[in-house]
Image (cartoon, rainbow, N blue to C red):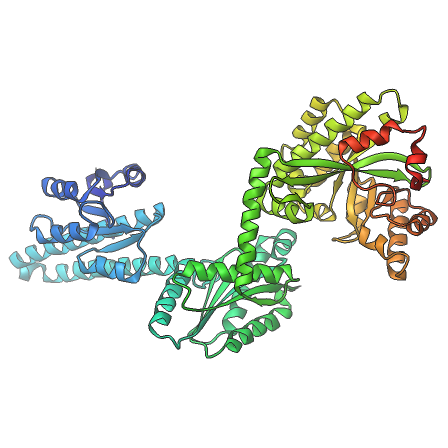
Length: 621
């Protein structure tokens, strides 16, 4: 093994980007190397001739002389011809790499630069140069003392050759590792993109050539990972990778992009049915459980399929459309495949446009709140309101929450929107309490506000809640926070602690749309929940569908058993109202009583409360 002191090694870095020079110079200097920098090819040539470096790191794309020209001139100069040159470039095409080696480069590092890779490759090249220098030195001595040192030199040469071979083996492994996934052994994104780019160019030269790309995302993988642990998740990924390989032909490529995402390149198919047959085969494989350390693990996959066409000019476009089709498969219920078409792309563009408008809406405060009354069914009186957000777009008009709330949750905008909603609702209730202070019943009204799971997962949520209550002056016992059932699936216990802190502030907690998500009695008993809100889908069919009626009965009974109140959403007919009263449901809301009202409508309602209230709102009785 050749050892050397980095302080004796002089390295010249050539790059027209100051940030790249700084990163590389700092990295190598930290290892003890003597580092010089040049911002263009001309400066590099002068610097290399003035003080010969031991190694040159050379960028390809530069304004005056590109890296290829600089390297050719270095190799043409007798003083600098033996200096090893490692090329640095974001150009990752095979032909670019071939040209780099043709002009005399000894190695090629792709950008963006990985610091560990640079250090290993620099160390390898320095060691190789020292090894070659040592061989040259020993050969000169051999000429002088051939007979005396023959055996010794053979031994040393063999050792050095072994070291060179080992270095080459390490270098080959680095190249392999850079193109393969460390967990599954499949190709990684770099290898996939390289192969897809080659396939696209091949298809352009051969119009009859057909290929397809399958984008695969495991369903429920996060649940498995969170509940059973990351080691089990890793074993599942390895098992899935092996299954995918068994579904393919010899010339097909399967790669792992990261996480639970896989991509398959079907090379040279004869028809569309070849790709759909592979999709069916994969779905069939995944229906069988994976036995991992004595445990049966079930999973499925959503698959997007895109077929090659002359319209595709690069791998990113192909991957994008396969990804779009995969998300369509998830939206249609998962465990299936969908074939990409332009309608999907147009829909994605509309979604991106809506996202841009939503970001502007947050900045411009285009949201308003409406308030739907919540009624005590037993006492026929108003007990509070649910704050419901509305988006007033300047050109598109009113956009319903069902269109923008899921997008806000996906993009993280729900955090800012949710905080605004909470503060606005608390402030509004406090204003009504002050404005109608002469009506004692108004002081006891509650405000229900929906809280997204992302908000509860924020470490600073409780501090924000305290600040809002302090700024608005609203007492916590006037506030009810509504959460979804999915929030209760919290293996780490963070949200459970947050909910306990909410209860400590005398704030009530409701589960919204109960019965439509993941329900578990153990979760309900573990968390400090006060109310179950029965989803409107059950109430709608309650008088026509015995199954829905029984579901409503069970939810109301469950709530009472657990010491909770039941609130029915979507009460629209007198028959529904009478049925809910007969079942013992405590509270309700819906169009039978009132549609969601703007603040001025609520104030008109409260102005008649309670003296002539029942005359204006007879359905409350």
